[in-house]
Image 1 (cartoon, rainbow, N blue to C red):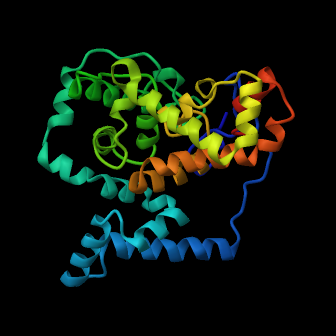
Image 2: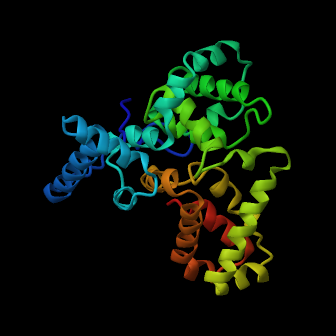
Length: 300
């Protein structure tokens, strides 16, 4: 049976048990005005990424993209990167091309030398057409995770990396996905490596900050959590470890990453607070078990 895919590649006509059914719902049609806005943004990003032809313009655009704190760059990222430009923008923000150039052949060598990593592969975006079968996307993800586990032997592979690397693979080549994973783990402003280190010390720090922010900006919700003995680790750990990739729709996740790659952790905290604030009235009406169930269904 033919798969019906959304714009990110996820299979629409698959149920929660992995069975594919006939899909009768009409495809959403983007309005002319909406498509025009996308086309305008795409042209602007093309100029920003590649210039318009003259050497001076190309040089200025390289400087523009190289400045992570440029006001116009931040503004355009927050408006959302067009799907067709997202891989190029993310790689540029993280300096992936420079890493590939500095380490020629490293990714290929790590894949060839790596040991087997099977854990979590089959649970990574099972509804996405790319990872639906063992071959193809699953094999690519296996190679990227193997390579990273050898590249960073101290950390190796940790649960949660599969969703991040899997998302990257839906947008770019294996080698680009590998070096983007290296960048977000080690480089500012993301610096996610400490989340996966021994004792997960930085994970505890991040959760501590998140909890303090909830008490500061959503005090009524914080008091309700305390009353129900609901600790932040029970619902937010996976959100923060994977930057929302493990359980939220790609429509949201890609927008979060557009900004996270430039602005870092403040984006993560703001998204978390926005999710809680949006659902606060509903959460306040329920007890411990119902709240946890609500968080599991929150993407819907």
